[in-house]
View (cartoon, rainbow, N blue to C red):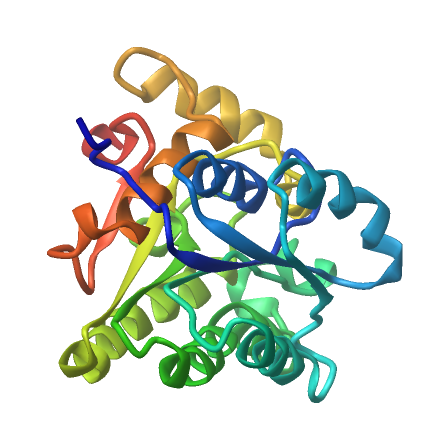
Length: 257
């Protein structure tokens, strides 16, 4: 019997692996286990040694640098995929950034420059990804991004990333509507808090983890493998009827928070 989540014969791009503990790494592992052929990116030369083991573990055929702040780098990733593969079935966008000084202050005290940078990297880059992926998804496809419950409710110390993630979720809905006639769907995975390098910039993050664990039904936090399985489902044909949605992977925390 064929597995419900089957990515055999599909090719996907994973943007945003920082190291083996990142959400993107968990998703890449799940895509690989489901049979997908993968391309992955790394931020810069400094990050390469942390991403290489993940790329090797998932047998990534393409590995390229991608800092969305550097003109031309994101475009070069898709140009390489177009030359080597000629098509693409799914993309995971798992990048977010805010300057530390803006992230660790109240929303009313963040700078215009810091807010704009966070919005550009964390949200607008997903629009760019969608535009670049569109011509390669000739048989339809799946666009995925990663969000957090702080987009819907105030989470202490999440600060300006709350409005930024809210904008990202709205962007998902509009992209889903724009590309539906091309059979390209877009969804966001609202992941429960995971102790990653990216999360280290959020003030008192360990306290947030403890609070979420206490309030989550079953008192169990999600891991990157749990999130990866949700991503693999959404990337597969089994998830083809899910579009424009925020899909929670948080063990039910959002239902009681």
